[in-house]
Length: 165
Ligand SMILES: Nc1ncnc2c1ncn2[C@@H]1O[C@H](COP(=O)(O)OP(=O)(O)O)[C@@H](O)[C@H]1O
Image (tube, rainbow, N blue to C red; front, side, top):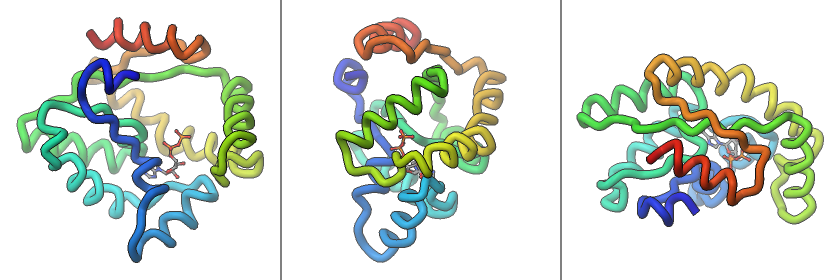
């Protein structure tokens, strides 16, 4: 919805990784199917290549990147080198119980192995250890827009649009 409205590409790293072919695919899929991250030294060249495509020239909506401090710092350095700036970091806040319910629903309607109950707890823990620290990193830069994600998709969309316009 958002990328259509803003007319910029939606770049979902999870989707890119799930669709990966070639020789790295097996290594990456065996990790992400268990809820583990793809390695930083795999993600960084992948994203460098993706963000250098012409459709990214006027901006992009990142979904799932950066997810570790190593990624955030490398991304920051590459933005500065290109004289580009991040405009917003959208932080969607949802209660853990609600998230578990949503993931359980997604598992019933989809095929993602990492949505199984076995891996959900693991993904929460990895988020807390490796991704949550990015919030204070970006808060210090004044970029974080906190959004209540426990609303209907339409209301979340409206709130995100208002916070980023
Ligand atoms: N930036 C990233 N670095 C490392 N692994 C990633 C990254 N983005 C996605 N992944 C892997 O892909 C999986 C699915 O990502 P994503 O589709 O964004 O899931 P969700 O939105 O359900 O958290 C993640 O759990 C992780 O294993």
